[in-house]
Length: 267
Image 1 (tube, helix red, strand yellow):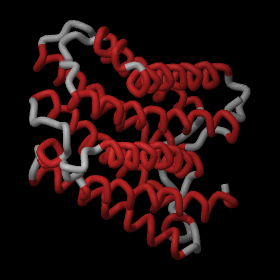
Image 2 (cartoon, rainbow, N blue to C red; image 1 turned 45 degrees about the vertical axis):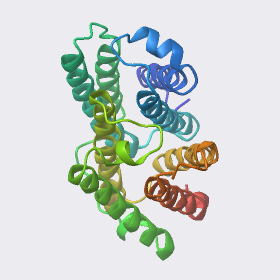
Image 3 (cartoon, rainbow, N blue to C red; image 1 turned 180 degrees about the vertical axis):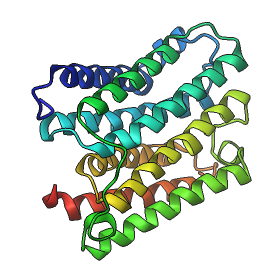
Image 4 (cartoon, rainbow, N blue to C red; image 1 turned 30 degrees about the vertical axis):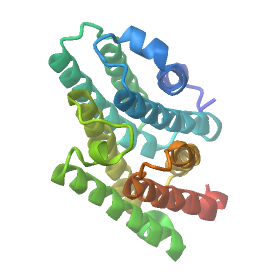
């Protein structure tokens, strides 16, 4: 398991997978239980929308753990996950401070996850040096390389668009409302997670693509496409859906899936 005989790594990654499975499953499939655990979070449609989105993201990260359980550890996973978890810790602390909530389970879990990731990374022997690949993205497939450049550009554009108008998605998406909690969830979805994605993209540009990161992106994209079509189908004919958000996500999904299938025979 994880292509290593180091039981500390095995147990650590098992715990990371367990945490991701627990939160991903709860956020995606059991919102009622989630809201019962965090009574300071309003059980409205806006929060539900972003919590389910966060759950899908979390299940995508879980796919990376499963991939490495079969293929072995890859440094790119830690390049992505450690900044993400640090961002989550800051985000949860901000939420608790603003709401006055006293359920610190999520914050403690994220801190434990960060410690585990750092320990596993250290025991795996990954150093803070990133050898440059022979070519950008580590592939001579020009289509995949150009799509990865496009994905990086879109990630940056998405962050910039958020800061230009933080409430745009809330205003323009049917069923959502501009609320304090909704804006905080939007910060996590449209800023903190994309920043971690940028770390992963820059790493792959320098060191070469990594199967674990491409697999995580492909799994997330497959789930997100299903959610996009479901939401579009469920939107009332008298309500105009947020086509900018749907189109932006769809383009990213197509990029992820295209790159995954073009390069899958190389990892």
